[in-house]
Amino acid sequence: MRKRHRHTIYLCLAFVIVGSVELLAATAQPLFQDMHFRKGFMLGYPTASKGRAVEAVLDLDNPANTPVWRLCQWGTKYTLADAKCAKANYGDLYYENPAKGVTVGGKDSPNRDLILELRADVEYGEKARKQGESWPHVLVEQDACKLYPLDELKEVPFTIHLRLLYCTNRMTQADYNPRLHTGHFQMFFIIKNIDKASDQRGNYFWFGVPFRGSALALAVAAIIYIVSGLSFGLLLSTVARTLQEALMVMFLFFMPAILLSGFMFPVFTMPEVFQWITLANPIRHFLEIVRPIFLKGAGIGELWPSYLYLLAIAAAGFTWARARIGRTGLVG
Image (cartoon, rainbow, N blue to C red; front, side, top):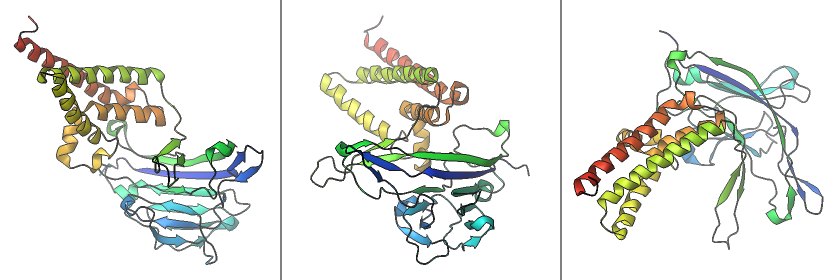
């Protein structure tokens, strides 16, 4: 059997400058702890539904270690909870199973500070990943070691160095599908309102999503998306007889469109019948264009199916609306 869509991703993350904040009083304060990962990790469960619950503590063979980093392994069939800490050259310590590996490099090791390895061929076997099938994650996260009010901060200097050691791709051009997630590296800062007295408590901002793609590709997508939205608005206006009816119909359409767009819940987690229904939702296709443009630098040539869906939705909407208007006698 020919092997398809097998990926081995080997990432080396090296934090060379400790993340910190500079207060308005011009005093630098640490923002994170254990920037070289020497205290190990709190291992999360393979399912994201467990939240921040800890399945196991990877203490790097030192029971005195108290980890501050969380290691997430969502979507995997092979948990690292049963893996044993092993030693390698240069003082490296690592945990490994058939599907993934985590290495903390020694003080003078060429592998410092952290290596994350994911072997997707073990997860998927001798087949391509299918639409709707979950994909494995290996990522690290940490809360700030001290909370600072924003109005006291001058800046947040932070540097990260990343090397891709290797990536094996056995997917042929004929198998290529830009909608199927394979692997990426991404970093986020999240600022969250935790003031118990605030009516905005729990709201947060995400930082660290750079624009990687073509402004032209994004502009074309935005124009087609707006046109498709106008076609739906025109169609809905042929149903409503009053402004109040139009507002009610718009509300009944808008909320399901958001819920079935993939913005709040991934499309692949929905029942199959709803996944088919989302194909008629312009918001879904616009999101499937915007995300790859922002995060992967994708262009129209890679995302043309989503562009075609948007064009088809716009054309169908205008055609249907004109037919209904013609039947009412408003158009000769």
